[in-house]
Every structure is written in C-alpha cells, then in structure tokens.
Length: 489
Image (tube, rainbow, N blue to C red; front, side, top):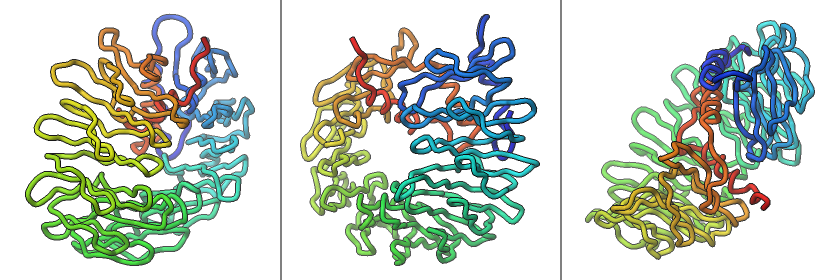
C-alpha cells in the first residue's frame, strides 16, 4: 500500500482489519465508517480481487487496491477522497476524479469547500500537495501533523511537520520553517490566524509563534493559543524552576504549572501553578488565589470575564470560586464546566457518599456517581450521567428527566448545535450492542466494524490519532448524531 513516514505501518493495519472484518462468502468488508456528519455510510469492500468504494450501499468506483485508512470526507459529507492503486502507482481519487500518479500516498485531509491536501512520494522524496500544487520535497511528512484549516479572509492554509536531512521543519502555507532536532505541541488557533509549536535543538527548547522564535529553555509545556487574536501562553523550565510566558511577559518561578486558560476573546489569560506548599491562581501575572490545592481541570472564564476554579481549603473540603465568590462547601468537587454562552457554571460535587450536580448554586439529584454536566449552546438546557445507589445501569438526566441505559459512555453526552436534541453513546448488555440514543431513543447502531476501522486508521496515522473510549472521536460521532435531523415518519 502507501509508503513513507509512519504511513509504512498501514499495510499491516489494513491486513489485520481485513482479517477481522471479512467473514463468510461474498464481498469482504475492508473498512467501514461514516462521513463526519454521519449522514452517509462509506465502506470499502473487496470482491474478485477488486476494491470498491460504497457510499450508502452504492458502488462509486473500483480499483486494484484502495488504502482504506486514507479515506477522508468533508465535514458536510459532500466531498470524499482516498488513495487508490493505478498500475504501479498510487493516485488520490477526489470526488471520483483521480489525480496525478505518485510512488506512494500518505495522509489525506479535506478542508472547507472540498479543498484537498495529501502527502505524496516521488523518487524517494515526500511532498504535501494542496489542491494539486506540490510543496517542497522532504525525506518524510510526519504522520498526524497535516492540518488544512480555513484561512483568515478566505481560502485555506496547510500546516504540517516534515523531516529533511537537516532536521524537522514546520511548514505553513508552503513556507519552510527552520530545522530543529524535534517539534511538538503543534497548534493552530481556532480562527486560523496563528500557528505555534514547541521546538528543540540539542538541549535547548523554544516556542515558535508565527515564525518568531522565543527565548531558550530546558523544556516547554502547556503551549496554549488563544481562540482568536494570536496570543500564546506556555510554561518554560530552566533548571528546576518553571515560568509562564504570556504576552511576552514572564511570571514565576514555580515548582509546576498545571493549567493555562484564555478568555474566549483572547484578551485575558490565567494559570494554575504550584509554589512550595501552595497552589496558586494567577491572572496576567497577578496573584488571585493561594490554597493547599486547586484543581487543574477547573480553570475557566465565565461571562463577563469571571474567573472560575475549584479550591481545596486548609480546613478540608472544596469549593468552586466564580468571580471571587466562593460557592458551597463539599467534600469533593469534580471538573468544572462553563456553558458555551459563559453564563452558567456546573460541576459534580460530593458530600459523604452522595454525588450531586451543582449548577449556579442549585443541586441537581445524582447518586453514587455523576459526570461533569454539559450545556446546550444557549445555556438553557443541562444534562449529565448518573449512577444511582442500588439501581443497575446508567441514567442520562436531561432537563431533570432521567433516561435509563444499561451503560452510557462518559464524554459522549452532547446537545445538538441548535440545542433541540441530545445524544449519548449507550449500550444494551443483553444484545451486546452499542448504539447512539437521540433524545433517549435508540437511533443509530455503532457496529464493531466501524470501531475496528477507526482503530486501524488511528494505528496507521500514529499514536497522536489513537482511538480512546470516551475520547474526542466518539464524542464527535455523538455530536453528529445529535445534529442529524430526525428520521422521516
């Protein structure tokens, strides 16, 4: 199959997948999945030595071989691309049209409006091809680094990491950055305006933002880009001391930096750090709070710029602080969630052996366990998972109404983007099946074939794309199911 970089492991992953999914007579299913919006099913089958791409059960095109792990689909499901064998070469088939031949094809990415980028090999050199235009040659394109995002002012920008004889480079819109021993924490801001990454040369590490190289350090951690505005913040260690670099200003020293967060507009930044026997909350270099312990996963900004975090008090117990006002005291609190509109704050909380969900000072019923709550986009609706003492199964509690499932995966409970529906990945133990429940009603089964296919794709792309239960991929699938219109009756 395809060659180059980590893509060389793809043939083994595909072979395992084919053995796992092929059963009985007739066509063998080599790969099964959906478009990102989950409105169309995509399969790759093998029949009589020919690989076929099927969309919603209809054959689109047949080839001598298809690298199923390369299949990419646009967010709206209107565009599909994959690598296929043609003679002794490989081509990228985009919306049914094959491109130019290559010795090998690696990762494929589809961006807004069907823009296409992919890694391609010719005569032992690898390039990223964007909308048919080959970029500079390298020894390898690093797997899992190719990004194709909307550019400010229209169009797209391609970002990836590549290796040459001189070292590893980050390439942005065809411009090759300096050579490094290694790079990591590659980040692109949500508005596509800023690109940042951590880089190492020998023993010294730097942060590179927009091509500008920051001061040297022994290590870089928690590199964070503001959603918009191009601001960056990160933790840098020199010797045993950590400092936070934000807006060009240094703060510290600290023993450890546990979290960094920007406000939604990118104008403010705060962090949680450890110094001596205390945890600190710092905003813009100014001390906000000092306590024995502060949850690293509790730091957020609410509406009006109110800073939110959870504190363990010196006398015991924990409280969530919002805008300087401490909430009720509990034995323990969990991760803090802020509604998308920033107006509501919720979190799991425990007194004794009983968990509740606290939302804006109100306690919602829980039991032996509750998940972190999720909010609809307008903040009006709230949902969470709960286990009740002495009752089997898991309950999805939505707007105060409980829906029981044999099991439900934490991290997959979501509201649709219009706030009208909700979805969760649930399971039926007697029938040994998984399915997406929308508004409490089973709608779409999740087949083992699709799970195996996603795992094989992740293995081919490298550890950065690993499939984890309750992780971003399963959540994205659940989100797509919630966003799908209800089936016609």
